[in-house]
Length: 322
Image (tube, rainbow, N blue to C red; front, side, top):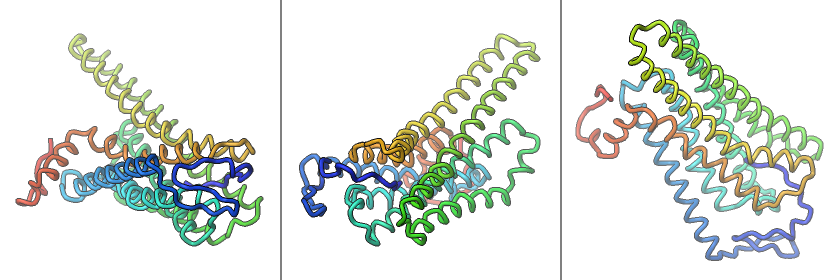
């Protein structure tokens, strides 16, 4: 995601792929480190695209996976696939450093895709957390509250809000310093900090309710020993799942946004650090398929059938996935 960076002392910056001359022109200087770095990032892009493509094919092909929750996961997979397909290559081709100097159409288009797709991915994660909240905390009214109509609205918001934000940055111009600062601050609040707080609160609530339900089952059953082991396993699984979901999200995105806040406070942050944290944030799109896909046994079964080419050999849309 693009941010405004103070250009003071920028001539002292060292970049593995570009050389800055006295006229602020970046000339290509592909060192061995640069080539290896781009090969590594290209591999991450390929893994991101392939992983999310597996999720998309699985949900669209197998009828068993046609559920409200999985439609939200499908929307997330589409956003993450486009991050791997568009944002990764564009960011590799013209790094943040070069776009600091060239305010041309290419940089604006790249920034729009960056903002739109990354924020869409975050908002889709937030919608999935809301879905899980009603499924765990209000199971009796879950199907009534999270129906197909509500899911469609969630998906539209997850894509519509980022589109408005991304296009606004181009249409408004953001030339005046005060306007740029306000736009960046509100962008940070509504694109990350507010969704992150909502997700953290929701998952904490889910975990507490799951623990309370597990203790209730343990207290009312006669087979305390046998059920106690089951409940303990349930609690460990719930804890592990929530830790993976929230831990991966915050480890990926929080360092980048915290560093961005520091840059607004006129704290000098090396450009190389910004680029590193930006790639760390983008890697969340690569990890999401493993978290929301491979964690469930029916997705693993679907992946095996797709990778082996079995779905090409016949009609398996009604297959029972274990």
